[in-house]
Amino acid sequence: MAEGAPLFKVTIDNITVEVPAGTTILNAARKIGGDVAPPAMCYYSKLQGSGGKCRTCLVEVSKGSEKDPRPMPKLVASCRTTVMDGMEVKNITSPKVLDARAGVVEFLLLNHPLDCPICDQAGECHLQDLSYEHGKAGTRYEFQRRTFHKHDLGEYIQLHMTRCILCYRCVFTADQLTAKREHGVLDRGDHAQIATFIEKNLQNDFIGNVIDVCPVGALTDKTFRFKNRVWFTKPVDAHRDCPKCSGEVQLWMRGDEVFRITARKDEWGEIKDTTQGKPGWICNECRFEKKQVSDWVIEGPSKVNRQSVISANHYVGVQKPGETFENVMDGRQPRLFMDIHSVSEVNKPEIQLSLIEGPAHSDDFEVNNKD
Image (tube, rainbow, N blue to C red):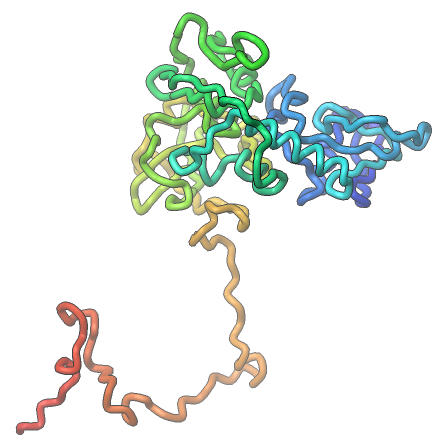
């Protein structure tokens, strides 16, 4: 956005924010953050032309602008609609939006299989989060779901077209990051599918980024398939000197073993910018071939949203609560009035249970008084 651009005031869910002219409603809502920001399955800020396909970001414009206060007659896609000065938007405060979003989720799940227990995307799947927050308990669809065979798209990527929701993110990624795009959307209507031309493989140095942009488990990393669950691994920020990309990645580790490597992502699930301010796409060498801790300079644990299942047992940035007794007693420590070992003859502090073979019994605590 050019310097000196006028700022527009827009109110979203009764919260007013100022954004430059040309900003979409979705990005204005993301500036507020939290539940005010509509969900998005197809929009990706780093990809030109993305958005307007999944319809999950629909919002209600109750006031067009100060000059023309008339409301928009229909719900609009917030990722493609720019703000006007004085615009008022309803997201989670609109029953129409919530009802429409539930219908969109039901539509996305018409053909999507219920294979979350075996899907590698489980635990970090945007469709899982969307269906949990806005979905319904059942479906009205009574017909047979469409199915596809799995396809190996080269050495590192496998395509599960049955899970695909046709968000077009992978198509835009290959089109804008690689020298030659070899896959796209073939056929039309309910026959549309992501496929390669004449069964070609995806071999470009940056083609692994299609795995990161996929919001569901349609494109999976063959080097990580069925090896672990994301909530059992610990995300760690790391970097290396790479001649092809920035080398700033996220290692998913369990102990000292690196199970997979991805680009770093922000709170919206999009690729983070590097420390130099450039998009953080990573190359195939960093993603698939550098699976040793010695290949990387470890920066520290990644900050994970505490509501995410990935944050289970990962305590990053947590502050231990202070001692209540010390606060009440002006910093004095509590005094020990009675030593339980001197009163009770059951516990013996000199006996280390960890050194006893098998479970402890009463014989282990008997004192020999024969002397």
